[in-house]
Image (cartoon, rainbow, N blue to C red; front, side):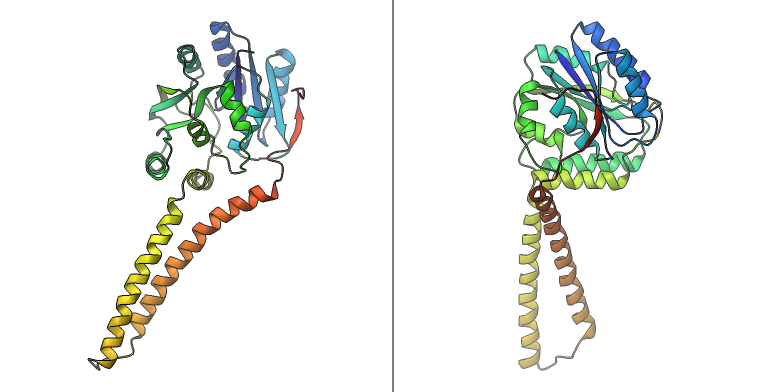
Length: 309
């Protein structure tokens, strides 16, 4: 198998046929052997039914049907577990990322690159708030991590089989695949493109999911938040030390101390706020450790036409 294409699917019934047509045309033009692995992540519409129809008509169409929604990154991981291609492409089903770009990625692979990721020049059809938060997050993450995670990129990329094998050995439950792929290393490059508007349907990436995804990325590849808590602790301790000296001087030297409810409340609220932030950040790290310790299955497959090894 030359190329395996992983397609996570969540309520994309209106895009399935068009996506298949465009992907199959690209692969035929490349004249390669290929498989299309659709991973149905608990869709509530007719997505899995349409995929099964395609699988009966075309032998290259494979599918994995989850028992429920496990999340985009887990769906991609399930696909990675089942691939057999020398090169693996990850692409979403909403057609915002053009399948035709795979041909350019494949050419880069022939030049010796093992990771070819798609870098967005612009993103059409997205709100100003989403564009702003994405821009800030990617640049903040790049500053906070010790590894170089490319900015303005998603999961749309082509990776070599050897990288897939490394990813299979990374057991963490809170997946941030684009960070993991950067961490692995090897020869990496990019191709640029204009990201299009969604062809049909509605996005499944709510702001809540985006926030959770951002936390996964930060906690998986950076301990800067914990360091910030430590710095805040030192700062508050220094301030409290000088305030204590001032209070002692006011009482025993200047003898003009007046019990102050306002200053007391400000101090309590300030220190209490710092403590709550610290507990919350530490809790995020502990929560992820707890998920790994429980070692539950990353996903549960209801049905699949991919034969077990």
